[in-house]
Length: 218
Ligand SMILES: N[C@@H](CCC(=O)N[C@@H](CS)C(=O)NCC(=O)O)C(=O)O
Image (tube, rainbow, N blue to C red; front, top):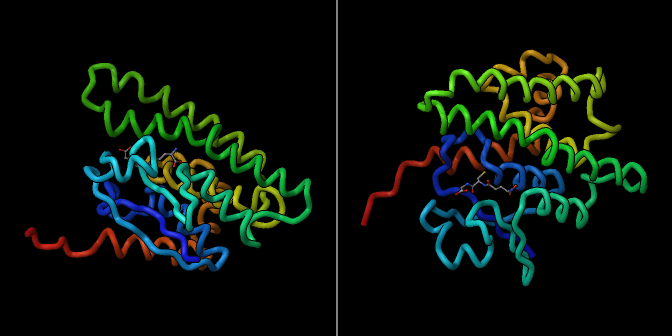
């Protein structure tokens, strides 16, 4: 059965691929699972039909028969469990790959989201300029630790896994700040992720949505 995911009708990043549906699209592309997309507006995301699928009124969601999921990490994990290719079969390696999924979302992403909030939502506050270097340093500290761990390896733990998929996706959000380029091995790691044919298909699919001509009203 083809799953249906939700994505922004019009992403605030206008197709840079940073909205989280790209992560789910990428996972589905990696495992070769075709999917449908239901596009939702910001208003529709907060209405009862969408809130029944996602209690926080966000994207992405994932529906497959009777199953409805929200939270990107959970969706990617579900896809990785259902299909081969995103989690190793060796039990220890699999547990480590899952650990990297959590690390991406709960250790590396939070300071990156904080930086994004500082730049997008707090730039007009009187304390913004004084705070920004602190927020950037928190991101830098995490990137430094990750960079030391990765060293000159291609992926975080052996073969590419769902852990890399989420980590690359999270790191992509630092590119515009310039911080990623301070760590050449992480920049190369992200570029390796982006070069994967599955990522390119996922990116192209979201770009197509976000560069469509607006539909005439009425
Ligand atoms: N923890 C959630 C976060 C979901 C999230 O923040 N989605 C964003 C798009 S990437 C969204 O829907 N933003 C609109 C809103 O929160 O109103 C996940 O990983 O799926």
